Image (cartoon, protein in one colour):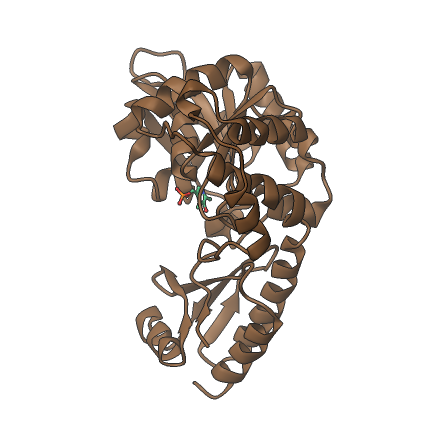
Length: 338
Ligand SMILES: *Cc1c(COP(=O)(O)O)cnc(C)c1O
């Protein structure tokens, strides 16, 4: 049995999801005529109390569209140095928006209002104008760490005072919300745009949505087109998103419980010096006396897949297709490995 813990993107659609996909009414979404895409966009916008939403092929696209909306060439984005938008989107801030980026430090991938305030550029001929702050929740490189709404409020206030836009890379926002019990609409009220992935813990084969004002989402449709993301009978894919929102959100808690257990199993290994705090479905192990490559190779020999996440770090992500039997097997296989 393969135990694939590389990412929560490796899941396959369930029978119920497939049925929803195959029976979806569809049309040409570039003409705005796909009823299932329209339903998904309206449903998720309403859930977050935001005006509108746009369905896109990937979270990279939704983030990059948001950055395009909130910057101009020669302006600057503020984010954590480990942000997905900076580290894992191919230099898109520069390539797609001709914008600069200021990278901040912060525990477990999180930044604070006072750090942001210090990093806003002065109104000076030398400096790129700061226009956007981007946060990530949960924070992938922070080990799936969570921002609470209380931590967001001062950042929201600051952005409002300074006239900055605030974007949330909420690829795994639902993982945070099922843990904290906070309401989606409370989050919607604090951001100009929010990006959410359907293809991670929610278990869809494809898709992300960008939420925002009607005016921003109207502009986003043009940007999506030029990025090559205008899709036709995309309702087959949007149907998976609707199904996931109805059936696979609360389930994320199971992934978190298994991640905590997995962290405890890893912590017992003599070659693991530390497990970053496990808040959601991501477990990051710090190694000692062994390289990530060698560690991962030994796991791979036992049919366990993980990813390198730094010079002495390895990441494991629990997901819809990682059940109790896989957790048990994981423990059994690693116990005699090192
Ligand atoms: C996965 C992910 C994205 C989007 O990735 P795609 O693979 O383009 O869908 C964005 N931000 C974070 C934090 C992610 O984990």
